[in-house]
Image 1: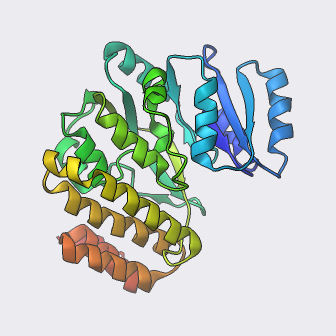
Image 2: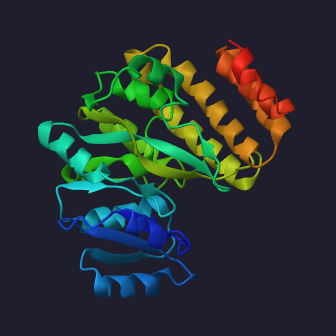
Length: 305
């Protein structure tokens, strides 16, 4: 399922990345685009029977994905943002995982991350210190323990474009919360993790575009408010699973804001956010990142333990 709002620049690549896998339906939801996305979808649907164009009126990604969910006919739904890409073998590997473990509610994979200029960033799991420390030796698919919700809460381990989930479960919980215009995906993964086991493939099977965001700009503030709202909603049940997860979440949220500021060229602001995160949970990695933001001292990667 692909929600698309004025995403014609990236959409053909996203669809192409799905490969020639025949037994799927490609639900693309045009969310009020004004860049020709609708015409493009109608054209490609005429030549590719897998593509099912759908449309909403610009109500946001949560509503767009819910429109796709209502139309889905398959027992599993996989998500892909229009500016992201799947890597070869992703769908087959996840479908096999769900076949072997039919009780899992959803699964996710590691992913590669890229800035808008093409610079490769740390992988999804590579930037999640606690998750990586616990699972770095794993090479094959596995099922997260009963504290899966706490792991998903503590760090941004789940990227939407890596998720495959049971259609029936998604519908049973009401899909994405349309009252959230940001962080609606994080909210849903936390909800699903409380309902069923979660599977993980520790391989980078998707490419994710990471956009620059000024933490104090309108988009940055909207993200921060939404993330805080979701964090507060799940803090109590998560703390009962893992007492450290709530503090880890606060630190990771600061790191997310710092990443957006760094990509936007706001290096001092990024460094201050990282130092705030360091004050909460000291780590050499955070100290190195703050130094790079302030001084561009990339050599510190080798010198700071």
